Length: 342
Image: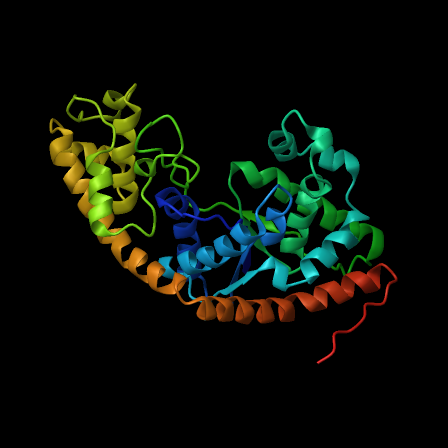
């Protein structure tokens, strides 16, 4: 079993990033059977498909490495790297562009969402983004790819590209590509803003009080939770009582996810009590969970040499794994790839 998953580097990582994606990565790593492998990459090549600041991208990439390691990704047990240090990602994308079809890419809903009304002004990279995603997983002969609802379509495209390539250029008993299967992780938590329970927690929100950041210390976490928007009603005993109360639902959901409980169990414990009791309890759970992470994150983010070393080590291993597939792809197409020196 080889699991491959990527994440775009974004700065100011917050509780939503941790509970929505990173924690699941850590659990995948920890639950792997002997002989299996996890490859986790920072999708910095994907990031340039949209307008970006080069300096910000560099900073965010290193911050993401620090956050992943602080949250529990072990570079000695998982392969952790960034795309840009493994040129085979971009090479394989170009080779697969000959197999991918315009009609397939035209059906990709994410391009329509990200390009908005200005499709003619969108970059070619944004349009061919799904082919690079296919290369990301096919390069490593991934057997399983963690996917949420928004990525299922892209994994299906990767399978279509792999199948067509194998059919067009390979013998039946010697395909180049493994067709990856979807790996459905436990439902990712949807964490909402502390200032507006109808909006997702986001780094782009101008109010720092809307989110718990991974770099926040214990005092800051408690302050933000105490000031989180709520309503005057006490907590109900059943979930139906949270209908129409988005901020209350958000805080109960955060507590439940952090403690690996059902929201119903949390309500049973705090039913009839107000937020003057519940908020301090939630703050304590958050501090207990995040304090070790934030401490480690702050230490790591100051050690740029260590972060660069982690990425370089991971990229070396990723290149070792991916080169045989890249060679086989060139060969199947009747091309001869220049061998790297040294």
